[in-house]
Structures are given as structure tokens and as C-alpha cells.
Image 1 (cartoon, rainbow, N blue to C red):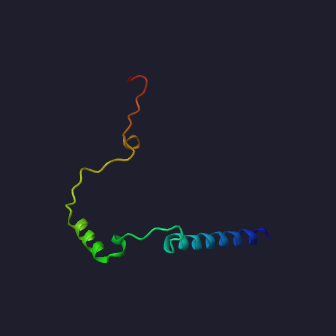
Image 2: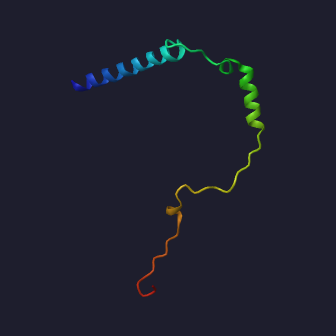
Image 3: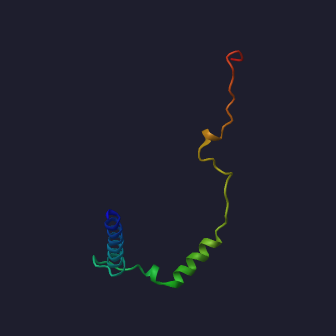
Length: 80
């Protein structure tokens, strides 16, 4: 019985979010305009050419968590 209400509520929330997104982003109910760079396909093509033409240079790989990559040497008390 409760599962029915949960499923219906979840679907209703998704429907509300979808309609709200369409109204705000596409219909622009709060005003605003779409930038000309987004509407112009030639701008997208030129920008893509520019990004593809940049040289790809990079340094050595970076370890995100160096502590977990260390080789720990466990010494006994007699060695210390």
C-alpha cells in the first residue's frame, strides 16, 4: 500500500521537475535570451577547430593520494 504512494510521488516529482526545467530553460519565463554563440553553429565549429589544434603537452602522471602509494617498511624493535 505504501509503495504505491511512494512510486506515484516519485513520478510526480520527476514530472514536476521536467516541466519546470522546460519552462525556465526553454520558454525563459523569467526573461533572458540565449547567447548568439550557442545559436550559431559556425561558432561551434570554429571553437572545436581551435580546441583540436592546441598542442597536447603534459607532465608525468600525478598520484592523487600519495600516502596510499608509499611502500611502508615495518621495522621490528630490535632493528630500531
